[in-house]
Image (cartoon, rainbow, N blue to C red; front, top):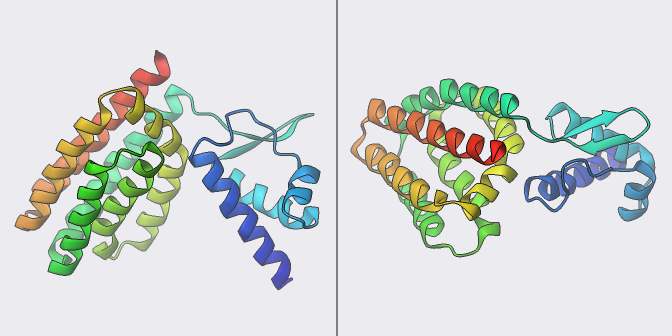
Amino acid sequence: MSKSTSAATTIYDALRKAIIEGELEVGEPLRQDEMAKLFNTSRIPVREALSRLEEHGLVKTRRYKGAVVSGLSADEATGIFDFRALIEPEVMRRAVPKMSRELLQQARRYYEAFSQSTEPLHWGDLNRDFHSTLYGVSGLAYHLEVVDNAMDRVDRYLRAQLVLSNGMDRANIEHFGIMEACEKGDADLAAKRTFDHIEGAKNSLLHGISA
């Protein structure tokens, strides 16, 4: 059982990363027998991994096709970002009073690494590292788990938008504003700038989906 669980987690992590980074395209089938051969395991942990991916919205099951990588409609994207705009500013508001100097220095390092990076494959991870570092001391563990799942759904689309638009310039300006508010200890301003950042990302993404 422990081996099966470990294998399922390994497969889940590998497929999740491939989906988020766009290595597996929307609609691409994830056949259990092929996955089992690829990971040198039985179909049981593959089935478990696919079930977890489906719970998080990254995979869906289609009749006659089995599991495929799920896409994202404009309505779904709107719902996810509207949800994030409700949750993340409050997470930020709760986190700011608990931020240490060391935490702020770490967040600034992620901000600077993101702003200076010329490797698109790294942008998504650095962006999430920046936000998760700031959110991490909020004490809202359930909120953070749900936010992380929401980010999984949209991350690959946001990466594409950063590449195809001026999204990096906008993100850098907004990250700087959030960082500045956190360093000042202004929780309300940090929350407002977080809300504006999410709304801006939503509008950019919806423009890309509808284009």
